[in-house]
Amino acid sequence: MEDRLHSRRFDDDIRHIALGDVISTNTVCFDHARSGDAGPLWITARRQTGGRGRRGRPWVSEAGNLYASLLLTDPGPMEAVRTLPLAVAVAVHAAISRVVPASGHPVEIKWPNDVLIGRAKTCGILLESETTRDGRLVVVIGIGINMVARPDMAHYPVTCLAEQGVHISPEELFAHLYVEMNRALAVWNGGAGAAGIVARWRAAACGFGERITVNLPDRSLTGRFAGIDDQGYLILETGRDTMSIAAGDVFFA
Image (tube, rainbow, N blue to C red; front, side):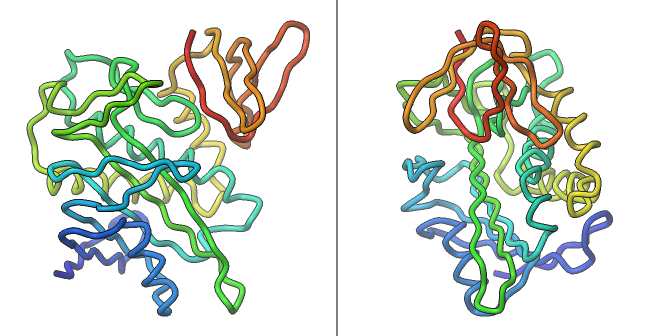
């Protein structure tokens, strides 16, 4: 079923295709892109049979949760795309904040783009990209939000919206996500508004000043989380040294 929605802030021709079971919504978006679809296009699915997270990790994708991916082509200059994940995190944070009771646990962002409720992960975000034959940059933004089911993850506390007193359908949450993503991408504005996005990210983030461990592919680093720079790099203070980290898994002490 294809459903045209109206965007007031980002684009006047965003399409939405709602599907049943798929391998992954990111995979469907790339299939569309390889067939010449430039987007912007949202793909949502009832369930994923091969959902994946960062670094190829599996993402549990049972029915009842929200699985959504957004296809964009040439969203901004290559050097600006670095800050796009921050805009996505801001949008997801805003969408979840709309439905979580104000009296509940705080909704926060953990670097780079995990959304937590009470320091437990409730959302995974995966951005993937490839270049078309004619040189265009295709970016697919994958978002999985635990609504009624959550995976068992040995290394992270996890939660779902139902555990936080939120009982709405994936379609209702997607409506919030759709609006908030439009707003965040309008602010980001192809990277020209990255400073505004960074400010919003910092306002929603958790862990500033805390001791953290950052797992890199080849080593682990421990130090104080001093924030992020204007490009979204994590700033880690380790004794007398200050390091900028582009990618890694953060664990709170």
